[in-house]
Each structure stands twice: as structure tokens, then as C-alpha cells.
Length: 125
Image (cartoon, rainbow, N blue to C red; front, side, top):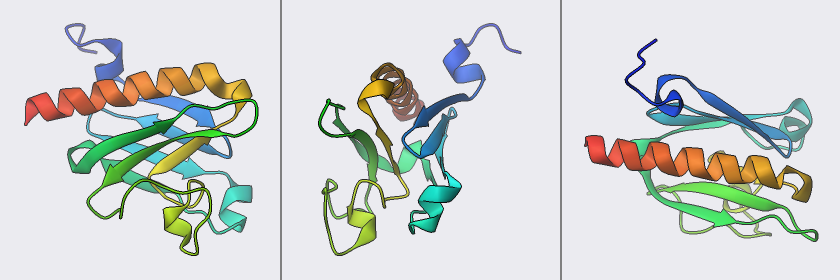
């Protein structure tokens, strides 16, 4: 293990969201959907941080789940709560993860980790 790197850069960090887990690596984020979510048509996905053009964040509240969407050039824009196209919804996009109100601390840690990895990736280019 390289002790010169911060822990966030030297090893993957996994975060459990609503029906999905996201793993932040130094160059990518891997989203793995639960079997129940896959039954609903949602797909697991992976995104290279170099391909991310924006990180869209909606905080979880007591009324609605929050989400983090790693937007790439392939996305038409920010996600919506409802759409005819599954990839345009928060739960259906393979480059997003949702967090419930009870997961808000994990949500905050995930946002910090992914933003830190994205900024480090942009500095390296």
C-alpha cells in the first residue's frame, strides 16, 4: 500500500444506497443494482470519471429520496422523477444512485468521495 496517497485514492470506497451500491475508484465509479432493482428493469453501470461532465446532486428529504447522477455527454441533461425513457429517470439511469432519508450520512460521504475523485482525475489530465 502506498502511504503517500490519501486512503480515498489508494483503495476503493463502497457506499450502500437505495437498492444499489456505488464503488468509487480513482478513475471510475461502479454502480451495482440489487436483484430487486434489476427485476424492475434498472441496470448496473460504470462510468469513467474522465467522461463525467457534471455531478448532479439532489439531497434526500423526509418526503423524497435524494440522488447523485454522474452526467456524461451521453445524457440529455439532468434526470427527472418521471419520463417515458427509463434512462432519463433517477432510478433507471445506470450512472446514478438514490439515497433515502435514513441514508443521508452515507449520501454526504458518497458525494464528497466522488467529487474528490472527479477533481483529482481532472487535475491529472
